[in-house]
Amino acid sequence: MFSIAGRATAFVNAPITAVLRSSTGNLVQADGAVIPQYSQATLQIEVQALSTQDLRQIDTISQQADMRAVYLNAPVRALNGPLQLGGDLLTFYGSDWLVTQVLEDWGNGEWVKVVVTRQDPAPAVPDPSSTGAA
Image (cartoon, rainbow, N blue to C red):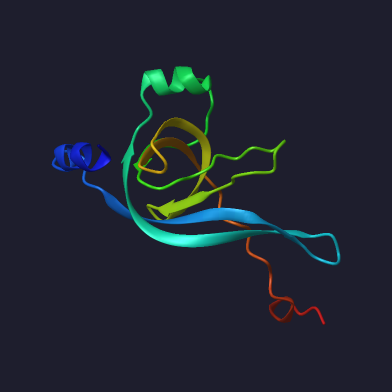
């Protein structure tokens, strides 16, 4: 079904290539630092602005985040803090986007509509040798 709909909408909103990083859990370092672990795949996605109905469904009409609706044919998980699941990331338009909510899910990874939120780039870690610190 996704492939049929995708062909029909490709003339108006062409699919783009994205990188999906699916969360596989966390690695806890000896010092207690938590490092997220991911598996990676390249795939085609369709990106759209969130509709009014989408905004009502996620109940964040007044939120100031940069969010999009994304359609893709892969199993993805939204961030679920209490269950410590998800945190899948998509990379497109030169940014990382966190999957924050699944709006529609058809079949076993046949296609899914998710809400993604643009993530700020990680702050640059200063190089101690360039600051004169020894």
